[in-house]
Every structure is written in C-alpha cells, then in structure tokens.
Image (cartoon, rainbow, N blue to C red):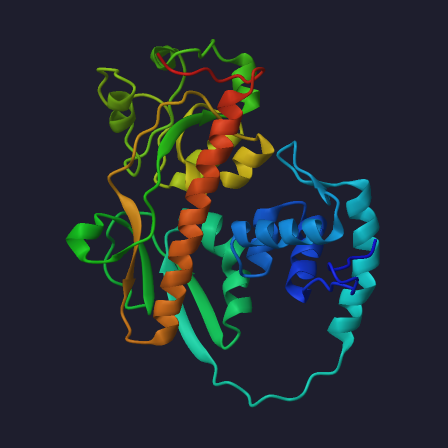
Length: 319
C-alpha cells in the first residue's frame, strides 16, 4: 500500500500515528494503547483515522467491543513493524540528565489497585524524571493525614478543600455465574429475593431512592470493609454488588460483571486529592489523574450501556 498526495508525491505517515496503530493492534484496545503511550483514547482514534485516510482502507474492524485487524490492517502492520524497530534501534545523543523528583502518593486499596497500579506506567512514561512511591492506606473515609505529597481520599471534597477526581455513578452488578442460578432479575424490586453485599463505604439507600424503592438499608447479606472485596465477591458469584463504573471497566469489558438495570445513583462520597507539597510534580500528577478518572468513568458508562442494550443480555431496563 502506497500513499500519494495530489501532486503525485509520496505522503509519509507520522511516527506518532504508526506508534498508535501498532500499540492498538498489539494490545487489542484503543484504551490500553492510550495508557501505554500516555494519551487519551480519542487521540489514538484520531491518529488511526488519519492513517486509514492516508492508506485508503479500514485497518480495524470496530463492529465488536474488541477491535480486530482487517486483512488490510494486518498487511499494513507487517510493513510497519520493521520500520518502528529500525527507529527504536537508531542511536540517540546523550541529553543532560534530569534531576529525579520523588513523589509519595497514598491511596485506598481499591482506587490504588483498579486505577493507579494499572495505569501508573503511563504517567511515568510521560514524566520519566518523577519517581513515584505508592502507599496503600486503610479503606475508610477521611482517614487522618499521612503527610504524603499527594493523598488520594474518598469522602466529602467540599469539607476538606481537595481537588475533585471523580464524579462516578454506581449500579447493581452481578457475575454471569450468579445470574445463572439466581431468581429472575427483570425489575429493581426483585432484588429483595437475592443477597445484596453491603459496606458502609457504599450504602444501598441512595440507589434504592433512584430506583423508586422505599426500602431501608439492608441488614442482611455479606458485609465488607473494602469496595474491592465486594467486587471480588461479586465476581465469585456470591451476590449483587453496588459498583462504581469507573472502577470496574476491565470487568465490564470482559463480561465478568454485568449491570442489572439502567438505574444508577451518584455516591455522595467521591475520590479527591489533597496536595501537601508546593511542587510542579504533584500538580502534574493530580492533573494527569483527573484526566484518567474522567476517561475511566466515561468508558464505564459506555460499557454498561452497551451491555444493557444487548438484545440477548441478562439485564433489562428498570420500571
């Protein structure tokens, strides 16, 4: 495949577009490619769209949740790989060494595991001079200060003057294993027949109100002190969990967790950041984290909606 401009000259694709295409093809996801290259998923899509326009053929089949190379895409990938390997192998000229900056971050276990641990490499790729230390703190709201450079907390951001990170929503979810054996769940009121997993960190009552159910907070069912433990229990088929969409994107994408109804609630307690040091590195980290949280929340909503709209899906819209 050759690319030509209107005057007959050869048009060269940008290195950035080729890197985005190769990463998306290798990882099978625009979102994963974006994290690896420290970009947004929309930026990856734009680069690949421009490359397809240049090539004159579709490189990916986008009709399913997972992106798959077309025949033309596979042919183009085979041509692109040697070029990228040659560029990587080119000798680089020594640059003055940057001073390494230390940045200590504290976060609760679920946020640290679901968002930070899996995406931190993207931040370090963008800011290689920043050495990040991630410390997990107890899974309780508004715990005492840790004096870290940046503290990721869950609670009332207005009361503590932090930087908002999430505006996430929560929906009841369950695993396909649980749904195979549970009583039918066609309407929210049928949740009274199944075990609801509980935690003080994510009360059910706000969601009950959104679903127009005049129910008190459940007093029975498994109870946990950590959101991540509830999600893990739901994955094992132990009951229905109230899940924040931005924290369960990977499980929504794989189908390991499925939203049950279109009704959602917005938890009062959201994640926010406290910056305890006057440094550019801390501000850069929080700015990056805000963008990541926003992208994950939107992705979670998109994946949940796709599941609910499937004709063969187990979930049906609420009353």
